[in-house]
Amino acid sequence: MDDRKKMWAIWFAKFAFTCVLLAFILFNVNWSVLFENIAAIRKNMLVAVLFLGIAGIAISALKWLVLLRPFNTGFSLIRAARLYFITSFFNSFLPGIIGGDGYRGYKIYRLYGRFSAAYVPIFIERVSGLALLMLLGGLAGSYLYVTLQDTVSLTMALTGLGATAAIMLFFSLVIYREKILSLKIVRAKKRTRDMADKFSDNIFIYKEYPNVILWTAVLTFLFYLVIFYVRFLLIIATGSYIPFVVLVGIIMVSNALAMLPLSINGYGILDLSFIGLLSYYGVDYEKAVLVMLLYRCMQVLISSFGGLLYAFTRDRHFIGKRENEQKVIVFRQNESKEVLHTIVK
Image (cartoon, rainbow, N blue to C red; front, side):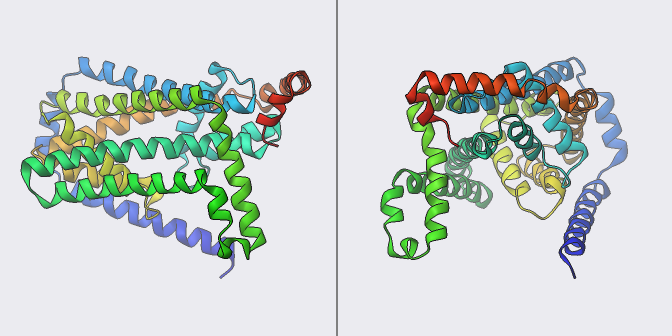
């Protein structure tokens, strides 16, 4: 089997697994109860949820823009927000084919011709978000285990805190790169050493920008606060209630499971784990399903807007400004040697 056929075989296997999971969710629904719950939804809260969802994307775009600052791209918030909405479109409607992060990185690379500026900020954006989510989820799970003394809460605590420790270990390897690179096993493989050295250089650029690190942490926290409140309000809108700390742990576990490369873009895994954990902590199954359906509908609405932006965005709109922006970068490089050292080529 050649690589192309193997890729399609994996994709269809993921698609089939996704369909099985979604079918399992729907098979266990009491439809009469579900329709009764739909009729009883507090519709005024759905408007607030939609605006919060849009705010979450705006915060993510601002965070990405902050992380781009050390690379002197001159990118504007409006353009960053537009690309982020398009990212949501790719992730929702073209799962497993073209990743939204890949699209953003591709656009930056075409504009500025620097691989580091295209993908290092996206990498830091994702890893910082994952680290905070795991930490918050681990703390939530610890609190729940102390309160409930159950296995699920213990697993939640160990998963969150363990993943946080692993991410901290990773960044410690970057910080102490000289000691790592001096190891015999690394020195013996020149290619491995060169790759590790270049990667560390690209990450280490943020050491010179403490304000970027601070704002990244603040915006990451605000983003997850919005995400938590979106689902919390959806639960309230269905007439249910769950403690906020429980919801934090549930979102952490479901998002972590959705990262497993078993389904298309996490569909099915995210839904089933979120619904199952909501039910475990006291929400009726049909209401838990309704919460997830409402959340998916919100994603579709916001992603549709990103699809419209993509339809009316032409490559020349981005490329047309490339020459002028590169001239600005060259001017900045010539103006200050310090800036020259901060740009990763």
